Structure formats: structure tokens, C-alpha cells
Image (cartoon, rainbow, N blue to C red; front, side, top):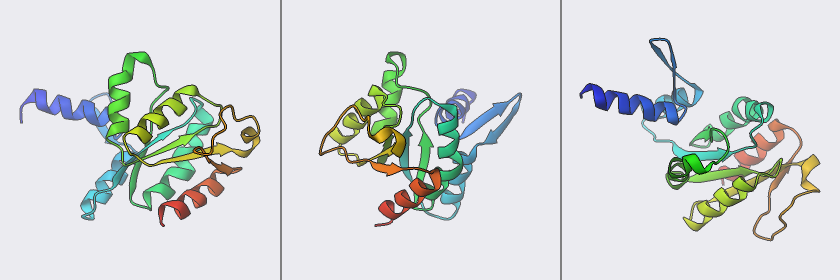
Length: 167
């Protein structure tokens, strides 16, 4: 392997939020460790992309309380970094296309989440929709095809997702 290949691998792992750099030190993130453990156990976790509102508190809820439950079902789940933007379209949609499952949280009603989930459905990638109960009454798009899991607490959503994914 040459230096250019090593840099490419490091950048790819950073983009997938599996590796973080602090000075000259590289460390695996939670997602990186989950993938490493799954690989060491001889099983390959399926890729799961999660689209959540660009809200730090909500992202933390997902990372700390919900993603571990998804991982127990054999998925290497990661939250999409930031909102979908015209500048990052090729990378964003490549991430979606490489996923085996997409979870779209409709809380805060980001139009990009609807679009990305529709793109995933067009690629025959299963989509699980979710929405926080206090926001479900004002859901902007009503469709028989979009039937979100309604939740109050992250632990409740984690249990419902685990139940849905273990079937």
C-alpha cells in the first residue's frame, strides 16, 4: 500500500464517521468500534443510514439510545452528517445507495428527508419512518405510503425499531 491509498482509506473512514483524528492520533468512533466488533465476530453488519433533523440534542438521543439497539439487530447504523445539500449531492446519494436500510425521522419536517427517503425507495432500499409524537399532528405530508413509528421517548423508539428489525 502506498501513502496515497492510506490517505484515501483514512478519508473514507472519516466520511463514514468511523474514524476521528486528534492531532496525529486516529481513534475509532462508536460506529467504527461496532463495525470492528462485527467484523471480528465473523459477521458483516448491514449498512443503515439514519436521517434525522439537524438538531444536536436529537442527534445525541439517536447516538446514545437508539443506534445501539439497531446494532443489536445486525446493522451498522450511522447518522447522516448534516443536511442534504447541493454541494454534497454525489456523496450523499452514494451513501444512500450503499445502504441496506434507511431510517427517516420526520420530526422537524425537513423536506430533504422526504426526498432522500423517496430516492431510497426508488432503489428498492427499505425505509422505516419515525416521528416524535408531539410533532405528528402537524405532519406536512400525509400519505398511505408514509406510516411513521410514533414515539415519545428514545427508549420507546429503540424498542419499537428493535421489534420491527428482528422480524
